[in-house]
Length: 291
Ligand code: FES
Image (cartoon, rainbow, N blue to C red; front, side, top):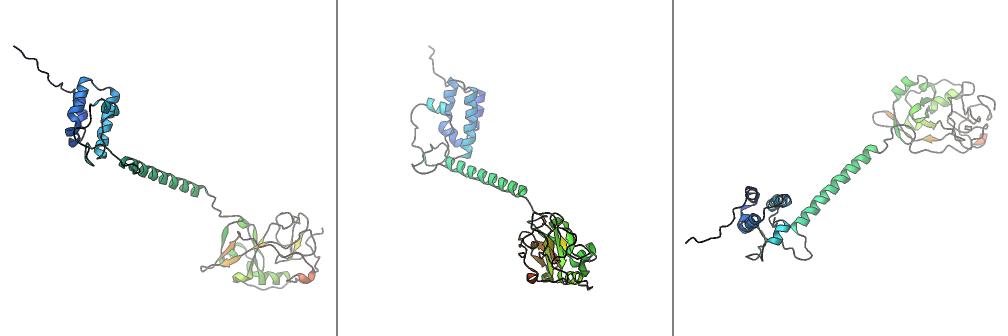
């Protein structure tokens, strides 16, 4: 008489392949149970995907169970042995108030991503931030005095050097004062304290002040006629309330003249003939053109 014996169902090839992806210790602990469950009810595509992810997880995290939630529910009963503290197949058990390893890793990865984003943002801002290299607000290198003499051949004799990027006149003060008095001297290498950077923006309403005229060797704004002597002091004629504004000048160790247009110094207040520090020998009211 034949005896009917129940033979364990052999898992399908897909299930066997999926189970092979798990660590040996995991298969030893859960393999038979999961295989028999899947042999009775073949896995759906979603379960197969979950099993594959669980295998990856079990290999990456030694405390991960790696069994899809649906299958875990289907697995009967409590574990045969108490969960180990670590090792494949151990049930994750995190004391209250402490981080699980997975949570810790997630936070580390999150912090890394945040740091990368911050670096990217900082780099973008640094790239987009305006780099002032000309105009008011910049520190400008005009070149050596030799360069300036080439650009303005009359500079050593007192002709102001017009430096367009900063809208300034660089005045060689001793030579310019002599020129304004009608004298002729040459100062090819003035020191930094003998240089004056006058802003060409008229202190009245902002028109550009032209070069000094030949007649009286003074600056005179064409808009409303404000008149300034060769060192930018306000003379009698015109509505401006102060002399021409100026910027600090220095010469570095390489002999390059530097003008810092971020530090504007207001011109001296308009006064009387007696308050003018430089007398060019002409009447206080003398102008380039009548107003
Ligand atoms: S803007 Fe120069 S005098 Fe008015």
